[in-house]
Length: 274
Ligand SMILES: Nc1ncnc2c1ncn2[C@@H]1O[C@H](COP(=O)(O)OP(=O)(O)OP(=O)(O)O)[C@@H](O)[C@H]1O
Image (tube, rainbow, N blue to C red; front, side):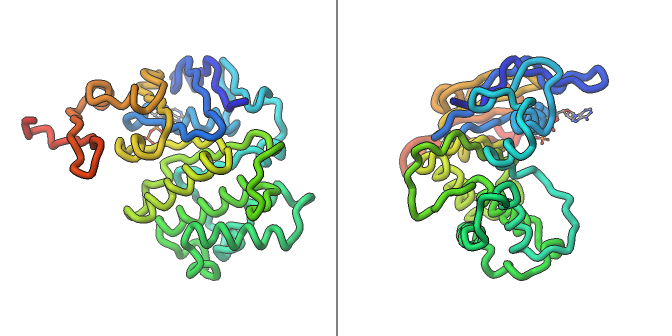
């Protein structure tokens, strides 16, 4: 079972934002979406999450049409960390994180909710902010609050001390530019958490990233979008070539040997010759 877009197109007022895109988000793997500004990445993520309905094509999750699933069913099976949030309610941080437990209100005990919220707050490194008013946080701090909120939703009815995955069904974590406002150590912390949710706990993780080396380090497969079309989709090692990236981003990109091992992808100011 996967989360799939099947020939998905989305058009609004005569403009096609994404065109005929088929990708799979596979449980246990990290899938990245990469592409220039305006390529349609956020639109595709919103179609996959069920926030928007495609003009044509289908989105399937676990063998079911996302468009036919209730908001509660969707919320119990996938968590989304959006690009920017306009939430201005004067909630304290802990209560914002606890919002992620809402889809499990009927099944979950207060104790389980509190345990999961505590663990997510610790993972997202926001323990020192837990009693602060959310609107007064910095942009990066808010990002980490929303990571924690998405995690407590993703974890559902899990007991984190019992890592058995059997019978949990498909679950997905969708992150729209999750590292954009974070300092470098929190970027890697977030990406490690996302990868661990995939590799160790079986979630299908989809994230929009702009940093090539974050894609090569943390993702298993990557979809490259350009002007609303899917120009490449496959294993990171096959897709993330300097030739492909230089063409899509209309900017010279090269791979250089990393003294620590492997290669890094670098861009240079356009007036500098390689
Ligand atoms: N409701 C809308 N009506 C018309 N055009 C829209 C609408 N929503 C988005 N667009 C346009 O569709 C294109 C794709 O937008 P989208 O947000 O998916 O891009 P993106 O790849 O996520 O970009 P970025 O990297 O800048 O976040 C953009 O050119 C955007 O201006």
